[in-house]
Image (cartoon, rainbow, N blue to C red; front, side, top):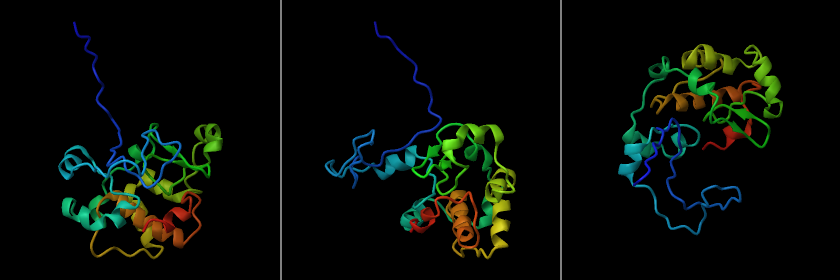
Length: 193
């Protein structure tokens, strides 16, 4: 008699596009390497199963491909999209090699020093000292957009693929026009394109 166990519905996950990788990291839990065949996920499966976060390097490296499956929108299209839930979630955050506590999938933003996590969790974040975090928590993309416009940001005539793409463009501008403690590591912004 079979013993059936229920599998919980996932709330978050990552998609492996291929096990072939140009690196062979010792810490890779999937044993990815250059030795794997170049078997990539099919476009059909990719589009069927993925809720694609167009962020990080993707809007730049995959722009032409993404434009075919996801329309571009003006900045205002994303003003009502909520940021606080994915930004301040308690699961799947990252800690980088510089000690930055990175919220969710928001590369290039630091909530503080992860080596002082107990203090950070107890005391919270002063959004006057971390204004970009304050805008994202309190006013979503609209607040950050107007803050960046006041510091020289100009809109893309073509538009944006996602709220994350817009946020990245806003932060790329801000990192050039001010010293914002939460925009870390600064080198992140140099390696996007």
